[in-house]
Length: 244
Image (cartoon, rainbow, N blue to C red):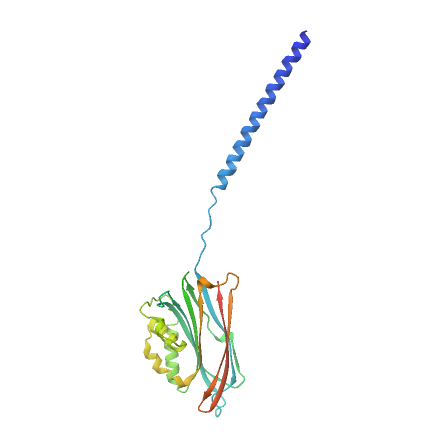
């Protein structure tokens, strides 16, 4: 009888011990879960930057056929600009530069290392106009004076110029000179380049909200050809816009 009573006591003791350890285990698990939840809640969502930087790099100019047949060389300059406009076609920022004047012979290729790269920041709703103007210069001194002034202002991408409406300018040549006016050079610079000197002009447009998420490089291949004073000419210009 005593043995049965003792067994009963032992079973009750073992049962209470099991219940005690089970309760301790539940408490530890609950505390551990609460700690993990607290840690997870402190993680912050990174802010996505929507502005983009656009860089233009001239890859090459090739003189396939010259305008000047008598001298066997063309005196060539290249002016290029990145112009940022808002939804109302107002110029917000501009950066520009000029290369040349250089004497090019038929078949000659000017490579990328001779050209300065330009870059500008485009806001989320901005539109970028990338303009290039290739000229064959008759008056060397006048052209060099103009190019010097352009390059002195070339890095002024931060200057606001909302008074200029780009919609009033229909050609790349006019757009570049409007950009130069916005940068503070003034429209009188247009008088220093004669239309007869123009070998070619082009404007490429990029809207930030329409850009592909996968395409980061936009190559532009241009061929400028025509006839001046019965002399034909043909030039190939290649440049690239890089988005980052």
